[in-house]
Image (cartoon, rainbow, N blue to C red; front, side):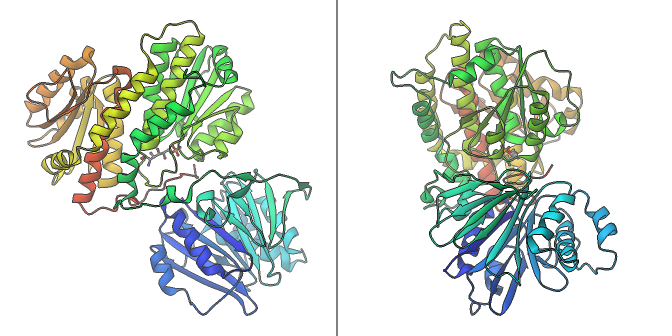
Length: 600
Ligand code: M6R
């Protein structure tokens, strides 16, 4: 979703801001803008569309050493130049960019801005106008910002510049992510470290309801009551080359191909010096005390949670419930006596999951976050973290983070099982190695999978994915992948459930992708395929070696059944990728979507 950058230093700010915004493109946006400040005042450039469109209108003759920038994912008001950030106060003195949602903006507008003519439809403009109002009443800028932040309800990450104080960027944060990067003779502001990793790897985390005064030579953190906060920077462990596409046409394809490597890296990261898989003993002890595990997540991470619940229940024999974060937040079930919560989130910033975490912490329950982003909000605020070690995932459609989530969940389940005295009947290190090899084989079968995408999906308007048990969960993920990047209406169903209603949608030629990797339900899912074929469906059966028949369209290498989702998802990812390519869709940045969903 929206992204913020800011720079104050000695170099020309424009290019640093634009490059930073390009690094945030992956988050999803529909317009962008920058404001740079020099002795002539503030110069604002903003445009609907891509950063390339913004670049085209930026005046190259304007040089400055202070500036802020923004990519906007529309919430209040359509994507347009007027609604794009930065927004300015009526006098032009204050210029501001904002991520998040100001829930009480309409009330604030009525209360404070009756006499102000707002030019945009955004909640953000209300904020900058109120800052101006307080300044006009005599507040110094810092006080005006503090007073404004104190009356905002909702989420915000804000960067503000003041014409009358050209040596400073003012920053505020509540719920939405924001970091301050520190350097020699310059400092920066960024929604995530990737945006500014080219200039510094030293970042200071901001907590909710903190503000920061960022100058070229100093960064001062304060609470909203003015109390100074001391916090040392941490080193962001991101290799700048990890966030480049290299020779790949799309990040998504690169990230699909990285999966075997990610699984091998995971094995290494979670092995002790003797080669045994291990998880922090505090985490295992906390889990052993729990009578039930609640997994909370959204989208692809929720699908990983479904598979993970099976791994944990089968190996460690602990009951697990899996919940969609946005529902759990408003509709919490009656909890067991000693629950333990697991939050699964690639970004670690998903607002829906974070809202649940806040409630869970208020209730005093232990929480573990499984995330790809060290230092992310969900990681910081949970008691424990397990990292995915998948490297930055840039494409909006999650691929390598999903398989890494499954890998970590499998390791967690098996270590927990051993700790509880349950024998794990297989060697997970060896079986994950077999999974990595199988992934590699599948990544080499792109041509065949592209042909399947052409055969089954080139003209269809819809598609169904069916499976049973683990394969059902993978079908859900396959359907999500297909719909989010190709815009084909796709649904995943439990094989036995179609006949309870949805089978009415099957027409002549409707593609039905069936997955069969589980011996126990192989015959049942094949029976479900017969049912849809009898009604005209065009079946594409993807089976696992050992279960294959002549009618199958694609066979994946044999792996441990419990780990099969790590492998069976790969043809689905690649089929979705090619279906989107064939339809000329923007694979890495699908319409309406954001990588990091930081509003509820
Ligand atoms: O960062 P998170 O894992 O918390 O994100 C959750 C979902 O927004 C995310 O998985 C989304 O569904 C992806 N676009 C799926 O490809």
